Image (cartoon, rainbow, N blue to C red; front, side):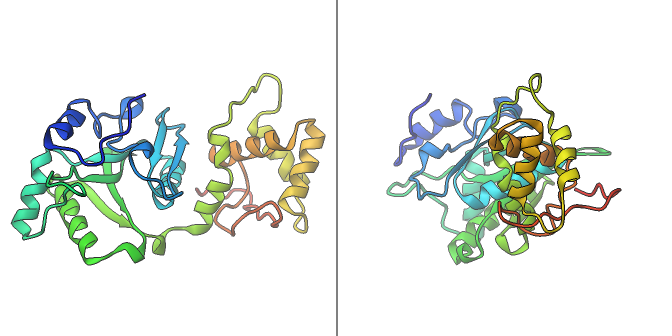
Length: 272
């Protein structure tokens, strides 16, 4: 594994990062420009496996991770690239100068910063592949300086004809995100489907045992006993069914936890 990137890089060091392919590529071979290990942790960084890309993704904040969950769940998503480098390196510097904005530099240096976009998504559309660039910020982080940098980023993507959007907590579907997070361990779980129930079978049994007055844990434990599996595997199987769109649990109706009641979708409602 490569070591931690220098915190006060020279232009020569940054050039080596770019030559090594950081912030470039696609699919399983993509290498984010920044890894969790490269940034001082404030307890908000997250690493998560992706069933879409087949690799581990590195997110520097919980907000970025939550946006990843939505992208991972969307059936049209075919690639997710985090910390995507805005190259060529000189372009954002020139844009900043044109706008009269102080170019971003690495702290404690005069080295121009390689700007990145938090997530670059590839979406399958009827007429081809659409790229969507997403910058993730908390509303409280939209300071004048951050807005300047976001403007540079927006111009970069607009000049390429690529849709760019700013994602904040204000317009995010919080129930869906929280519930996908509740079942996120299933993304990292290795299933041995030869010796136990499939996610789809477990989900059908869970729904059979469902009653409006029973909590999530009560239904889960009853179903686990019937199928003779432990509760952790039961939760993972149900989570896998949710992520596969094979569960009738309505993840938009309210935030789930182990003690909550469980809303189910009506039969025939396949909305995602």
